[in-house]
Length: 102
Image (cartoon, rainbow, N blue to C red; front, side, top):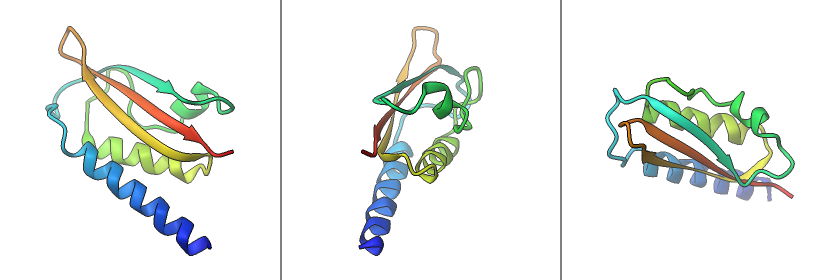
């Protein structure tokens, strides 16, 4: 059973990494805002402290991959997605969508 859980977790991480690397943002853009959605029991600040991406920091797909790995390593989430959007000033808005484990 544990092997199945590990396989599913790695599959989700792989899918998340693959989907992040297919974005259209340039590596030199800055992150203008970070949103966290879906969290009910885990505080937003507790999530933000565990991600490398920061407001006014450089946008990087590699860093987003690290963020997903870091959050999964906490063991609190069944699913994590990152949506990326441009703001009106050319920055990147990141929205981390999490689904907490019961």
